[in-house]
Structure formats: structure tokens, C-alpha cells
Length: 365
Image (cartoon, rainbow, N blue to C red; front, side, top):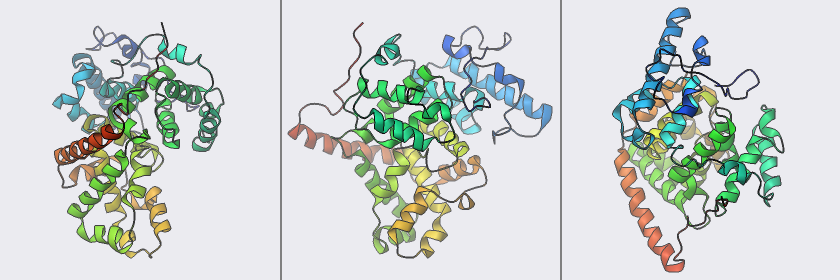
């Protein structure tokens, strides 16, 4: 949750009577109670007004703290209890802790490494990162600073994982995390999300985006054959050009921030198939406009890159419900990805026996 300046709140204490007070991980328990003073009026999951709203909000916070204290991070994405809580909603006051838990950020955290990474020489693309930080976050001065948290965090990541190909989407994702989290917490969550879900989108030696775009176009055809024909046959649009700005940024520069937060809540549990679901939901919202649009690909791409709020559901929960209602099986997406990835891996190994993700550079202790 952010304070009035837009900076993430960084100090909270678990209430002594919290069921998780004695067992919740130390860096998480220090951040739960200062948000208990008021309900989050911007949270669409907070029902009612006044005391009832506050009590419901506090109860949800406590359920999350208890669930995180009793479910190891590595097991969180296998827990039906956790998924039920994800669908019910994540209070803004504990959101970044939930994201870190679902991403298993603690399992990757190495004390002292982030500080050491920050001492490495300035990377060649630093000016590009600084420019993108200014362009992407004009309303958040602390993210636009040349030596601020966003630039520092990406400098650290790019020196640690030098085989990642820089794209503006990295700034967008890292910046969105920093709007929720303290700097080092954001770094390890960012690293975990990249390792688990996104790194292949940013490797120069893989074509993961092409794979996912191909699968997505087939999903559109299965869900709405008329719309698929309009987009991919009549207009001859590229599924890659549709999916790239969506998937590589986790929709962070596509939709309003409250929608993005709820998408991330579910994505960090369900994984990449949920990106497909959100993409299908956006197409559903824009369907009439797309079917009636003139045959101008540039206008269609622009519409999908920045869907008008007038075409979106009234609140984030309605979008989540629509995305989850899409009639295709997540396991089918996972199987198709594995199959195509295996084919690509064999092809890659024939030309380059080294793994595409082999390069990582940790500081010496």
C-alpha cells in the first residue's frame, strides 16, 4: 500500500493478538498492522462502509497473514486455501507480502547480495533505463530519479543476469513492484517472477513470445471463431504484436493500476495461462469495436494496447470473473507450452549446447 506520496509503506507491525504473530516470517510480520487503522476504500473487495467495511478488511488481512504463516512459500501455489483467498481478494496493505509469498521470493533471497550488486559498475544501457523510468512513471518522482530505486534495481538485476535482453517492459514491471514494495523486497520478488514466469520473454536465444502468441491465437479461435477470423484472417493481424505488450508487461501499461493489481494477484498463483485468460477477456470487452473497426491494423493494435476504460468492466473483480469464465483449459495451455518449448529446446541445443539461462553473475562473498 502506498502513502500519500505514492511511495510504498515500509513499516508495519502484526497485532499481538494476530493468530500469526508468533510464526509469520520476520520481514513480513513487521509490515501488517499500520494498515489496520483504516479500510482500503480503493479496494473493490471491501464491502460496505464504516465499521463493517473496516472489520471485513481486517478479517481478510488476518486470514492472509495466518495462511502465509502456515503455508511455506514453495507450497503456496499448490494450496487450494491460498487460491480461494486469492480469488476472494488481496488487501492492499498486505499485497506485496502476498506477491512475494506466491513468487517464493524468500527462497531466492541471499543476504547482502543486493547491496553488493549495487556497487557494480554502471551498465551500458543505464541511460536507456533512466529514460524509460522517466517516460513510464511521470507521476511518481521517486521512480524517475537517475539514482533512484527503479534504476538501481534494474541495474542490479541486469548485472546479475546479463543474458537478459533489455526491454521497456522490465522497467514497467519493476516500477509496478516498487509502487507496492520496499526496494530490496521488490528486487527479490522481481527476480522470482522473472525466473519462474517471464525470463524467457527477454532472452535473445528463445522465441517464447512467438510460442505463446501461436497458442493464444488458437485459444481465440476456440473461444470465438468469428472474432479470430476477423483479427487473424480478414485483418491479417499478428498475434505476436497483440500479445507482446500484454504478456511481457503483465498488462501493467495496458490497464488501470487497480485492474493490474488484481491480475497480478491471480497470475502469481495460476501462472501464464491466466495471461491468456485476461487477453481473451480484453478481446471480449472490445469485441463489438473490433468487429466493426475499419481495416486499419495500426488502429486495432492501438485499441488493444490501450483499451478504453469505457469498454472495460466497471471494476477489477468483474474483469477477473470474466477472465476465469473463458472456456478453455489451463492444463491444455501448459501442455502445449511444454511441447513447443521442448521442440525449441532441441533446436536450440543443436546450434548452441549451452542453456539459454546459463548466465548468472553473483557477487563474491
